[in-house]
Image (cartoon, rainbow, N blue to C red):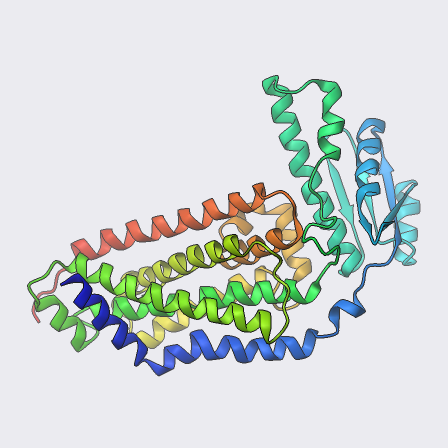
Length: 378
């Protein structure tokens, strides 16, 4: 019976041309526009050697961080030369565009200041982000007695910074924008979950009335519907990835097993999210619920840096990191970004845990809603 319900639902979904367009054809068309706009972006934004300012009140932290900057290379050449100076001098040099940025280093923190958002600034931001993560890890190990104080510097210099993270040595900006597009595309899978919820509700559709009358467990029907939408949308996501890779020549790196895992978890989470929208706003019509889902998806995409908002994404990463963690589009795009650039997969695993956690929470909330639903009459 379950297999029959699954196949029936799959056939119903395949006949929904509107959702097939928005979740499959639209991302490919949008990808074409991205490809036309960003095809020469990597040549334009090739990283050139530049100078960064160092404003420090702590000699030890300064020396450790400068050693890390020396590791950032392209084609065997250092990308950044550090120059020690006062804060006033650094501000002046930055305003005159003589610096890519400058760091203020004290005993407790390191802050980056830039005047624009370009390739060098993106690299500096990633270097600082990874350095702070490795610093926190070193402090934790030191407090636990797992390392000796003299080993901390060595541990920090072994950090997996952006250098040669994808095995190519290139900082591919075109890929970065496509990663955010993939995040938005997978988030659009909420439409399939919303369609499922709508077709299961007797006050929303004739299909819902029939499903409520059949002598089968409603949760079994719901699971069959979700599995069908997951299989369909996951296959769509794979085709979209292959189209981006082989037609638009987007670089994804070599970790295809992890890339598919991200897409699978993202698909599961987005469909569960769409079902939750349908259950939360059961009294609204389908188009109103679609509008709510699209609005949330576009806000998430904007905050993930998709629409030229990289500076906002950077500010959020530094000042409101929790907001990045609850942004599903950002979790997906950042995971792809980490797989492409970083040698260490620890930040990537953290994103997977957040993605899976959201999916589980959404499923539990949907279960709570669906097991309690009742109708006065049909």
